[in-house]
Image 1 (tube, rainbow, N blue to C red):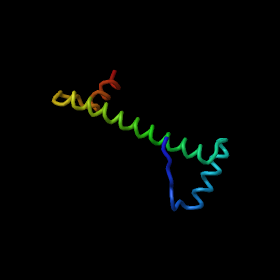
Image 2: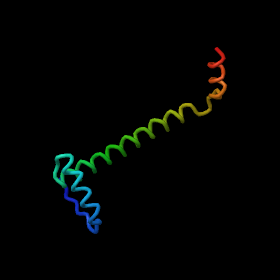
Image 3: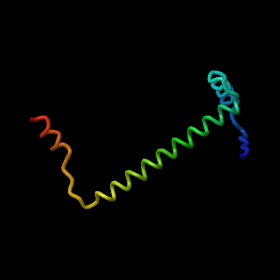
Image 4: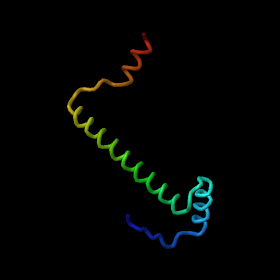
Length: 78
């Protein structure tokens, strides 16, 4: 596993992270590891979503689409 050094971090941020770590019953290092992992996984999820929606958009290209407002009006008129 790699190591990471973060320099010039504001002392107020460090104190807030320490409080957050204590509230979550983790060490500061454990809290930072948790936060970084969450952010990477969230980014990966967003990238995956964008990739899947891009694929759907390309598959639907050239296919005539019905205006959603028209569909909503038809549904309400039933």
